[in-house]
Image 1 (tube, helix red, strand yellow):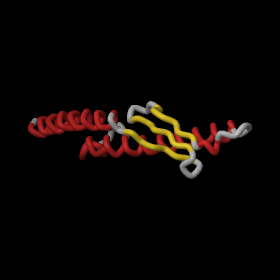
Image 2 (spheres, one colour; image 1 turned 90 degrees about the vertical axis):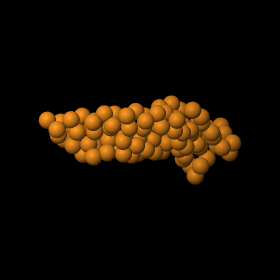
Image 3 (cartoon, helix red, strand yellow; image 1 turned 135 degrees about the horizontal axis):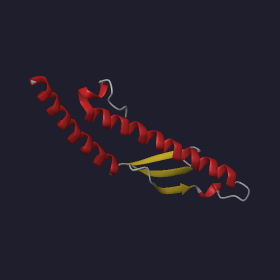
Length: 106
C-alpha cells in the first residue's frame, strides 16, 4: 500500500502542476505570420484570435482571396505554435507520469 500512497501524492502534485500550466497557457500570446510578415495574427493561449494586422500594400482591389489565404496561413502558424507550447507545458507538468499507459497525450 506504500506504493499506492506515493502514487497518489505524485498524482496530486501533477494535478497542481497541470493547473499551473493551464494558467500559464491562458496568459500566453503568440504571433503567427504569413507572406514574409505582411500578415500577422495574434492568438491568445485560449485559442482566441486577438488581432489581425495586414500590410497596407496588400489592400489592392481584386486581391481579397490572396489576403484571406494569408490570414488563414498566419492563423495556422500561430495555432501550430500554440499547440506545441501547450504540449510542452502539459508534458512538463505531468512529469514522469506523462509516459504511463492510459495517460492522455497532450
